[in-house]
Image (cartoon, rainbow, N blue to C red):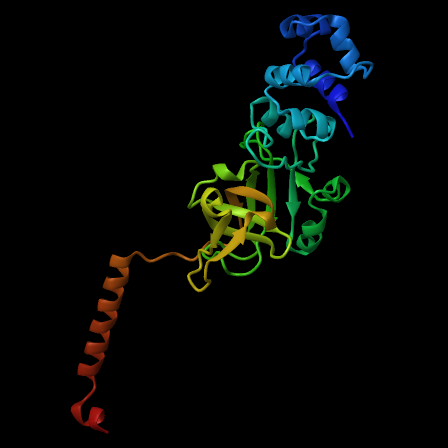
Length: 272
């Protein structure tokens, strides 16, 4: 389906501009613009390129994507030039919810809902059934979602902690060493440190904080969503990580205690 007419009307209204104002900037008659917006006339290639340059949005997006179904966050990203068609990828349309003031909610995805999320992540009805909340200290210009951890692969972040992530549309911008919630159809939801090899090999390498777990590769085609780590909430205090010099002192102290214990045992008792 072609969405060009409704898309250019929506984009013009978001700029709070009249048909006369936009037509003048595009160097076309107002009646021509009105014809495009009302699907009375069909634009040629040259006209499509004019609109693409004016709104900084790819022709494919203007034609193929229903912008009215996108969240406010995604529309802002498009208007700031973050169009994945222009960047060489596929546009990822995020199912999202807003509150009564049209502000993006933060949806909660508990462990018990994660199996369903793997299949329902793009379904607005499924997303609308999730519990939501707001965190006033997070940016209103970005989209966030909170996932509950399961397993011990990211210790010292404890199991059942709630990890909030920022939705990432252009995965190529992710930096190696960043922590992310990654959704794949086979693995489901995982929380890992990433090594970004999308440009060179078309994949990510995922690392756990817990050294008992081996890193592994995920090719881009298997990935459905990526949320960059923002913070976590937990009712448990993470286990302390003993610094190396402190560990050396601890071992030395234990050795001294053991030596003193040996000296306190009579020679005969040690032989027996």
